[in-house]
Image 1 (cartoon, rainbow, N blue to C red):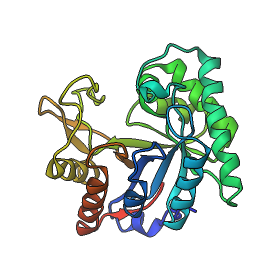
Image 2 (cartoon, rainbow, N blue to C red):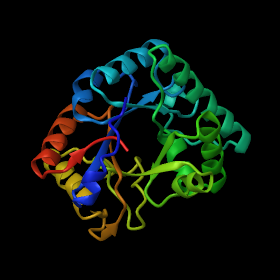
Image 3 (cartoon, rainbow, N blue to C red):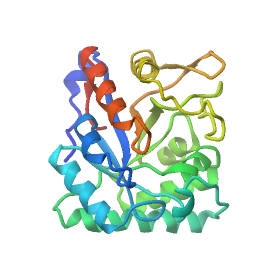
Length: 259
């Protein structure tokens, strides 16, 4: 189960961050990453994974006291859920709800529950800018469980629509992605979209948490609200990044815990 929020941290004005990672996607490094995160976003079999990987990831998360979340994506394993699909409200709603329920049923067999939901890939990025898709996702999450936290890109429709629906939210930022001047993520088709240098990823992660800013691809300071910081589990350096960023946070007396 996730560690409850410690209000002493708030009262003492200490920095606190949730470190989440997309797991159960077949990258083969989930066990190496799990000790260094506080929330796991588990693929639900549509863009990646299956019942076996979902169970394995749940078990590993429980062993390390990591909060369990659903990571629903487009039904498109061929493209790893990273190709845009133009779906209507009801289609997005059903797509997301089915995946959350699948993981909920498996979690129940371990006498545990889901903590959060974070959309994957193209679904996540489209919903950040498309109010209808964001509203459909928020509605699906609420119907799956009113206590679930919806993770979404900082200052995006995912956050605003979730709040309208009465859901708890987590403003998400990224240690291994570069940003545009408006706070959106640089598209993956851009060769500069991903941060693959360890020192740069650590520096960006610390700036996001301590100063709530990130340098855009044009070297402009962009203000963000960082409540949870994401590491992509399928990245080349995912395990190393997770360990180093975890160590850097601890060295700067930043508390790591789920929302």
